[in-house]
Image (tube, rainbow, N blue to C red; front, side, top):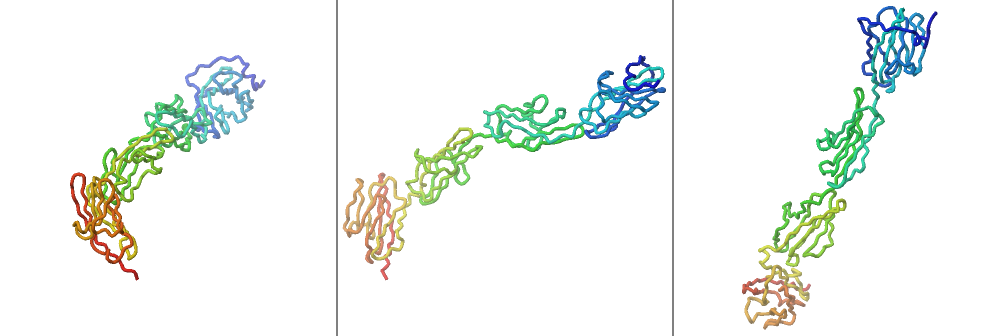
Length: 425
């Protein structure tokens, strides 16, 4: 009587102990999902009646894939048959288009004519073709030393190994300490600025590897080391001396992410300037004082400041008289503008010609008032900054004008200018 199907499981059998043992190998050795594989049997002995293949850890009917009768070539599928398996006459098992769920232990059970049985064990791991993972972040913009970074490597595969990359290279030691045991989660408490950059995770197995797109992390910090620069030279906390009537640009710099907002102040009073620099186009005594830059970071809510003192240089003491306009015409007014007059001025006097009493046009007194001199024509007006206004010029106003100043320390200085009045027509 021919026995088929599960009837082999019901036979009373004894295990046969022989010198050679059944072994099972895989072809190919590292199967990838979709491959056609063969569980190749080695070491069969004697005249065999039937084979039973099991996909499981024990010889349980629930794990039975198929039974095969050698003499007739009849094959009967079992409960564990997936429709892809087929037994060869030599006992090997073919599986078409394997899937990751085919991974596990396989057992071959043989029967000889004495109804003695032998078993062989094999193991198959089917490696999946890995899809590209995705890095998920709790946030991509964090504040230094305040926020926590949490990255997760999202992948459909639960068996693939995971490794991380930072700016295309290996993860720094400090960051590796934040990996979870399975490597899928990266956490970093009190994030640091040097940890800003591009993060990627990679999933891999022996036959497949896939890396995520980079996710860029920004770490906000600062402002720190706020300083004021002049011509690329740090001037914080010092005095800058500037020549009279020259320009000056002060730059506010700091270490900050993002770039801070800037506020400038002059002698404690806020200026309408939101730029990282301030420009003094023509230095005079009115621009002397303390300039302060305040840098504010709207992300970290921190701020810092720096100050410098700007003063006229010693060269500014040398006075200069500039007629405005430079080439006045008959009937016009002209102002002999004095630049760089002494800051500790006591009195001054203007003369027509050399500095002598009969030539005196007017004098400025310490009280701020001025008095007319012998040469005053009624058309001359003096100002506190030593400048002289001559109104309704005529050709006789052409000539030399002399300014004499006296400081509180008694220093006397004399300066001359030639005035040219052009005739009309």
